[in-house]
Each structure stands twice: as structure tokens, then as C-alpha cells.
Image (cartoon, rainbow, N blue to C red):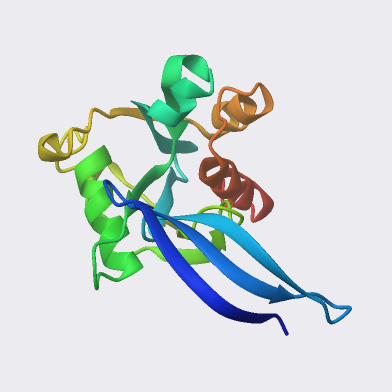
Length: 192
């Protein structure tokens, strides 16, 4: 069991989310204590979903600008991803992802299946991602999607063959981890 003591939180930024420096004493296996300091970025938890159509053998993905990808010289900041969103306070992951699907890609799904949850970068970010899948049909389309204007979202909706999406992973056109995880989950479980 990890032993911690003398934990001190120092807020470095609380703009869009909270960046903290956390100082603490940590006891190593040999019994020695060391004073350590780590930064932790808390932006809340998130949800993501891969929408798939068995009959058409297609998936719905999104294409949008991401500043961190731009800073890291990735495709001019353009990222191809599954539909995803941040959980609002006291909101269930299922409620969140159903809302995000309607806002971002324009489909009304009634039920989703949770397939896993994980931390994407536990060394620096507190976010836990909830992963879902759901089948979509044409009669579920309620609008064109594209995101919410008040949240400054500009999202292009992509409906592409599943095999093409897998090839986009292999050719590094899709670099988003949550998208890769859900595409591979779908492939491993022979959903398409």
C-alpha cells in the first residue's frame, strides 16, 4: 500500500480546469521517505462513444481542430475522433454521452453499452474516460450535428467504412487514443 503524508495542494491555474502542484512525502519500498512534487491537471471526467452501423459496415467519427495537437505539430491541429464530451457535475456518463451524440453528430440514441473505463494519462491528468458503443440507424438522425455554438464547437461529422477507419489508425491519420481503443474494441469483438 502506498504511504503518503504531509500532502499540500497549490493551485497554479484555475481557468478552464484546475492545474495544481501537489507536494507530498512518499514512503518507498525500502522504508525511506522522500519529499516529492507533481503537477496534476483536473478537468473532470469524460465520455466517448463509437457509433456503428452493422448493415452499412460504417462508423461515425468527428473531425475538429484541437489546439494541443496543433502545438504538438499534428496535422495542423485537425483530429479525427469518436464523439466525446466532458461530464457535467452530477451527470451520469450515460446521460452525458447520449447528449453529446445528439449535439456533436446529430443522432438520438436511446441506449448505449459501456465497455470500459480508463485513465488516458494518469501521470499528469485526473480525467477518467468512460467508453461506450451503440448502433446507429438512419431513422435516429435528428439534425446535422456539428457541436454547440455556445461552446465554440465546430465539428465535422464523418460517416466512413469501418475498414477505412482501421486503415486510418494504421496510417497514423487517427492518433486519438480513445478512438483507437474503441475501434480496436469493435474489431476484437467482431461487431463489424
